[in-house]
Amino acid sequence: MSRSLSLPAEPTRVKNRSRRLRRVVLDLITYALLLAGSLVMVGPFVWMIATALKQPADQFSRSLIPSPATLENFRRLWELLPFSRLILNSLGIATLTTIGQLLTCAMAGFCFAVVRFRYSRALFLLLLATLMLPPQITLVPNFILFRWLGLIGTSAPLWLPAFWGGAFGTFLLRQYFRTIPIELAEAARIDGASLLQIFWKVYLPLARPALAALAIFSFLGSWNDLLGPLIYLPADLERTTITVGLALFQTQYSGRWTVMMAGALVSIAPVMLLFFVAQRQFIEGIALSGVKR
Amino acid sequence: MHTGIKPIGRERFALLLLLAPTLVGLLFGAIGSLLATFVISLLKWDLISPPSWAGLGNYLGLLSDGLFQEALRVTSIFSAIYVPGTVLVSLGVALLLNRQIRGLSIFRTIYFLPTVSSAVAVGLVWSWIYGRDRGLLNFLLGLVGIAPVNWLGAQQVLYSVVIVNIWGAIGTGMVIFLAGLQAIPRDYYEAASLDGAGDWAQLRHITLPLVTPSIFFQTIISTVNAFQAFEYVYMLTRTANGASNAPTLVFSIYRNGFNFFRMGSASAQAIVLALIIFALTLLYFWLERRLVVYE
Image (cartoon, rainbow over all chains, first blue to last red; front, side, top):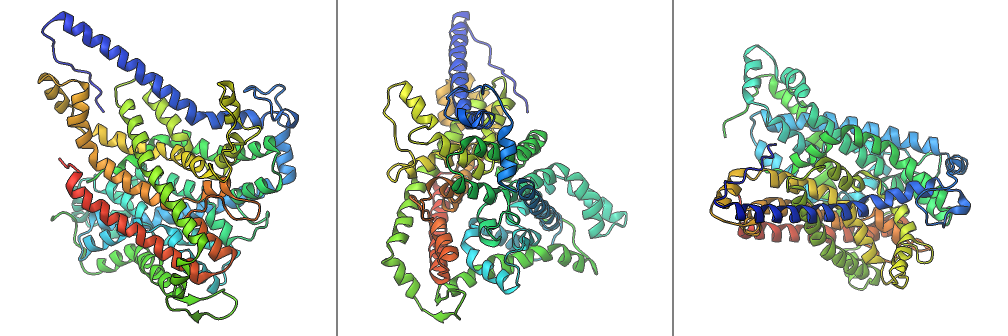
């Protein structure tokens, strides 16, 4: 990413100076707009944290700094809801989903990027077309299928589908695999490596950044999912996920904002942590999926 | 295109093995369940008694179903605001960020935060901000002398929820536009600058045309997302009896299928939703041939 600011040499110094002034003014406007936007983006999070640290009696105070600050709300939270249980349930489902997506999308992405086979292009386009098919459209038959399999009320309907691939993940990894020179696969071939070995030993290790991006996407998608657990899991606080728990909390304890904000904070904390650690992969992953190649 | 290695002998099985999950997903997960949705849309089925044939009954029923028409209206207004809103705002942010500024990565992180946060958690915060009597927004508006607005009341809630959805989608859009902007070769600008083109002319004649592929991509993504809207709708618009003040189509499908167990009607609505998305996709691709500039 070269960010060179090479403006051509100007004929006169006066023109040069007016240009520089223009530049400064434009820069100021840019920063002002970006900062104003940042306030809107961060504001709700700041308000969430501020409220979560306030004493329940102070919940309607408008100050940003809680005084006195307290962790009381977090204790109340764990009293009112089996919060650890909810987190563990969400964590388990999200982890299985991530494993399933990484494995099966990498397998297919490798085939589409590296292997030459008949109908490869047609199959890939068909897969891409399913990107236009929101999963909510096929909610009913999937529910009936899982009911027939006797899996309603278990978490299987939430993570099992991750093991049959996915258009987005396959597309993302295919895009990445295609940036790896094909000569590498050909050389490995000449050295006697089989297709599976080329996949596992050559391509997979090289695709770590893209795999990391997909891992974050899958984990987030699953962790933040509301509709799935709402439909498949019993509305029982021991067995549902943190998203449903929070939504139930909203109806049951409405008006107790400090505790509710503490719950919201706890539910986004692991995801925020993940994001700050791996945001480069995450952002590059999105950029990768948006670039036509 | 002749790149790629060709599987030989037993490697064909390896290839099949690698593709198997995806093939199963395509066959059952996508094509199969789409067909199944269509078949179920022709049935009357509450999951308790055995299904009976309804023919086009469910579809005809939708024509006189006030709740469905409300959902259709809400979804149309929602998309009509959400899609251009998301595209324009995130393009704007990306253009600002692309101006060789300091602190790019900090701004990028900030604008990205809502995208990674759970819509349920953030929805809770927004319901707190939007509150009529004690909400933060009305408090702030009060400081500049604006009378309190009932943001989550039946009149405004649709617009309030669209705003939150756009707010949550700017991050992804911005990253996609930034990638598109950074892919434009620097020499174009240098050449234009030598020819005396100012900032505005460069934006209009170089940047915008060359970023049209990203605009196209982002428009499609936003459209599909608009029709999927559920979490914020669930968190911000639900009424005491479990209905919604701004029911989107997905909310209506959820209600019919999983609260009322009207599988046939829910499936018919899903098919209508799929047809709308299909028609819009065709429209976009038709527009793409006319408007999108590829280098």
